[in-house]
Amino acid sequence: MNKVRPNLCLITLLLFCILSCKKKVDSLQSELNKLPAITQNGTHSFGFLLNGTAWTPRGFMGYISNYVINADPTFQGGSLAIKVYRVAGDITESFGILSDRCDHAGTYTISDTSHTRMTIFRGNGDLTKVYCQVSWNLPYNRRGTLVISRYDMTNGIISGTFEFSLVCKECMLGDTIKITNGRFDYKL
Image 1: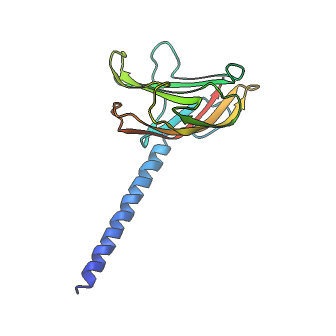
Image 2 (image 1 turned 180 degrees about the vertical axis):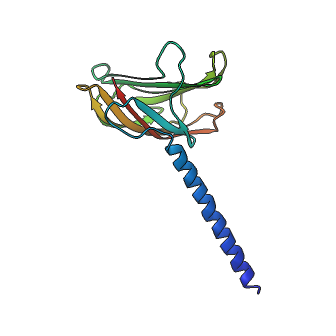
């Protein structure tokens, strides 16, 4: 009888662990399903997971589209700016990926010292309160990659994927901000 009890406890613990893992996988898949598909044909799509939660551009602040990519392969060795925002109630969030050495398809390192960096802004709707601001030129222990899978100036299409993390204790998004499963496809 005493041998049965430890085995029963072990089996119960294993079942609990398996079910917990399944819930995490189901939750991740649910969030991934909220993102647009990864494409390379200029579908004007953008999205990523912000600390495991789906993030896509939405809303309109009245003066600029909530998703813009500018690319010029002739300026400073190739400039690229991906700028997106969303308005959610009284919170405005914006993200940007900037590079001054991006003129072809390939993999680019995102870091505090590379030519490719990212920015984050989070504030109230009228932008009078700033809750988070990660400037492109300050150190935040950025680590990640930007993969340009299509850089087609003839047809005006830029698409790719990205992921990165950074440390910013002031952002109210957790000490480490993780952007994963990022994707974009844009017709210039």
